[in-house]
Amino acid sequence: MIGRRQPVGGARFIAATLACGLLWPVLALSQATSGSQPAPGAAAASSAVPSAAVAAPIPATPIAGSPATYPVRPVRIIVPTTAGGTTDAVARDISQELSQRLGQPVLIENRAGAGAQIGIDVAGKANADGYVLLVVSNSILPVLKKVVPYDPARDFTPIALIARSPIVYVVPAALSAANLSDFLARAKANPNAIRYGSAGVGSALHLSVELLGSVTGTGMLHVPYKGGAPMMLAVVAGEVEMAPTSPDFARRYMDSRQLRSLAQTGATRLPLLAEVPTTAELGYPEVDVLSWFGLFGPAHLPPEITQRLARDVAAVVEMPAVKQRLAVVGAESAPSTPESFTRYVASENARWTKVVQAAHIPLQD
Image 1 (cartoon, rainbow, N blue to C red):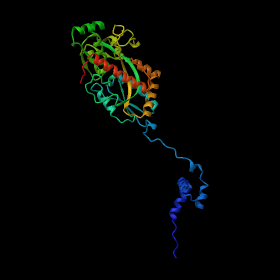
Image 2 (spheres, helix red, strand yellow; image 1 turned 90 degrees about the vertical axis):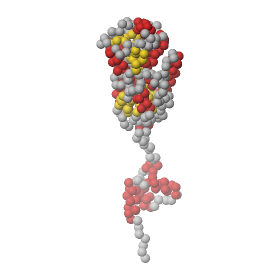
Image 3 (cartoon, rainbow, N blue to C red; image 1 turned 135 degrees about the vertical axis):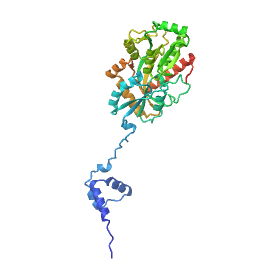
Image 4 (cartoon, rainbow, N blue to C red; image 1 turned 120 degrees about the horizontal axis):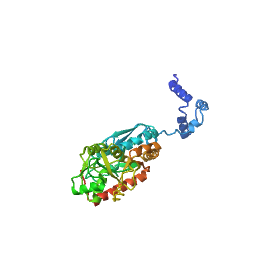
């Protein structure tokens, strides 16, 4: 009579596995559900395994790339204007400290063109995982465009306000206008003949001059450029008679005696331009315009990532070194929460839409 063959290999595998304690959770579960008792050999072996090994749950490990582990690779910030402009400077002013707080490189990518629409559109269509963000100014508000490929309320997640800055009206040093009143008188005498440049259609620079023209009853010809830097070269070269610009650009060209500043927007003088009068001082308090710069993500950005970035940006813009760098470009830090920034963007959009409609400013392509 031939005896039954024993599964020697399987028994050896189980014994070796039991010695390492790997099968005990499985065996314990099997016994608990079947009500059977462990085999004598297994019972003896179980005494070598701590009871905690059976009872302790296996901790959940966050999946790499999930909001809980963000960020696990470099973060890219799109700036929809040319390098060298104020928006670009603000983005770079916060990138180093933000990188340190995130523990990953923060890379700046300039995607200029079409009045900032190209870069804004690219950022809005990125994956909502926090690895492609957008630093942009008021130009994200499409209040002067006939058609735009994005909706700022639908396609973006407002994360944090970074800084605000007044706008400065500059003219070539050789222009005969001695002050803002002289310049406006000249513009009124030559309707739609005086040219002014801007950093793009719908930018805060553009809107500020349209508002100035509406308040003073002055018509001028708009010449848009692909950013603040090329606009400044144009006004220095005399391609345009006036340009609205940032305080740092105004200071630079004033010091080189290439341009003169006629006024800065707002109610108070910026320390960087203490000698330049405000529009309020000159009798135009309605021309209260500020450029603002903020951080956005694509729509549906996970709340954990939004809040993490907002906290880090708020901390960064309060750092003395960052405040100093922002002051150099004539900007003042403006920490916020995602909720307050969302309300601010909505109020700015409503405000400028009313200004455009009330002034009958034609929409542009």
